[in-house]
Amino acid sequence: MQNGALSRSNSVQTILKALRKDIIFYRYQDGQQVREIELAQEYGVSRAAVRGALMILEKEGLIIANPNGTRNIACLSEKDLSEFHDLRAHLETVAVEQVAAGDKDMEGIFEVVNKIRMLDEGASQSDIQKLDSDFHGSITRASGNKAVIGAWTNIEQVMCEVAWPDLPGAVNTNVEHFKKRHLDLFMTLMQGPETAVAAYEAHLASSRDKALNNYGNFVRHTRQQVGR
Image 1 (cartoon, rainbow, N blue to C red):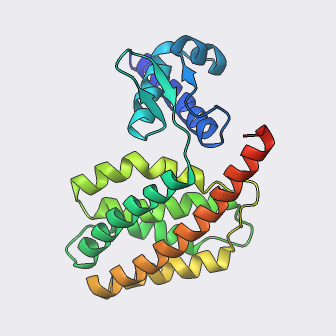
Image 2 (image 1 turned 180 degrees about the vertical axis):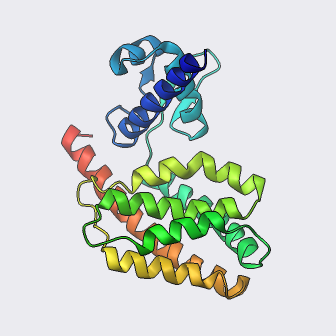
Image 3 (image 1 turned 90 degrees about the vertical axis):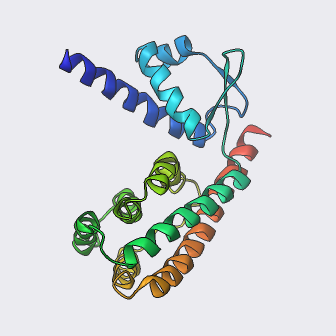
């Protein structure tokens, strides 16, 4: 029984990751109707796994569920991504302020920071992206703010995917630059809420500009490829 539940859970995660990436990478048309049975056949999973994945993608804003029971793809536009970043900045600055005020369990943050310190020049862009997501997520979770954590969970994987280094024209991240920026950010958490929030706001604004530039280039490239 437990093995069966685990298998179903793994199947949901398998199609969830694949379908999320395919939607973000415009492998489906915006507004295209999708059906459980067709997705199950295409991705080689059960309809139950497809249903579970679609429920999560609906929360992430990548699937629209209609009153008549049909579902449509909701591709990310540049405006959508900008709004994701606005929400991320709000959530994270609230978390940073609460963590920097003290009296929070920072063990999860310490674990990620140690991994960042150990990064070497051979680290791949996907390794860096994973640590970047883990770093910011660890601060959000350390805040203990359930509303912030819940909202962050709904956007975390989308935010990570749109920064994927495979995007055509994406600007790669230098390992040493990444390490310095994030270790410096970590240290501001020990310097009080005002200093920490100011540092994170500047960092998030810079990250936003880079992500929007990368994704904007990708979307324009994709539309040119398909003639739309």
